[in-house]
Image (cartoon, rainbow, N blue to C red; front, top):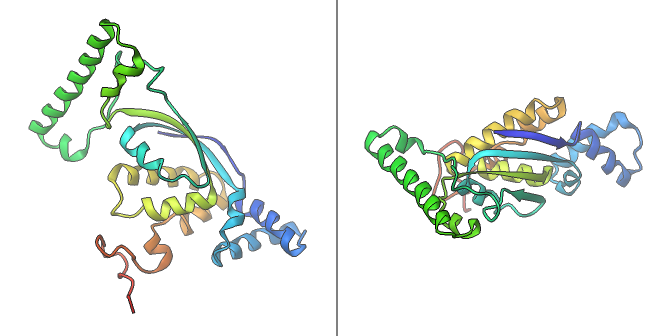
Length: 221
C-alpha cells in the first residue's frame, strides 16, 4: 500500500516557474511549456525542485533493500528492527511461484511459523528485540517513508518499471504510477510520458544480456 503524505502540486508549472528565472520569464502561462521543453531536452536539474513524500507499507524488506540503491535525490526513514517487537507477529509476502505450488507453499509457511516461534522463544530467554530480529526473513513486510524528487523518480521508473526488474518492485512501480497519475493533470502527463521503462523513453534497449523484446537492442555501431 502506498499513501501520499505530501507532493508538489502542478509540478510542471512549479519547475517551469523556477526555470523561468534563467530566461527572465515571469509569465505564468509559459511556465508549463518551459518545463516540458526542459524535460524533452534532458535538462533534468530543474525537475529536482518537484518531489513527493509517500508512506510505503506491505512490501517486503527485500524490495525495500533494492529501493535503497536509489540514493540520489531521496530521503527516507524505515520501521526499526531495533525497537519494534516483531516476535509478536510479522507479516510477509509470498511469491506467486510459491503460492501456486501446494507443497512449496507449505514449506514456505512452515518456515515463517518457525521463525516467528524462534523469535518468541528467544524473547522469553531475555534476548533483546534488536538482536532477536536478526533472524527476520527478507520476505517480512516493513514500512517506510520515502521522499524523492522528480528527477530521481523518473530515473527509478526507467530502471524499475523494466520487465527485467524484480517482480515485487514492478508491482510497486505500477501502484505508484496509478496513484501519481490521479493527483492532478500535470502528474498524469508525467505518468504517461516519463514514468515508463527506459527502453520506451529511449526507443531502444541497452540491456544486452536481458532483453524482453519491447524495443530493439541498441546497436554497437
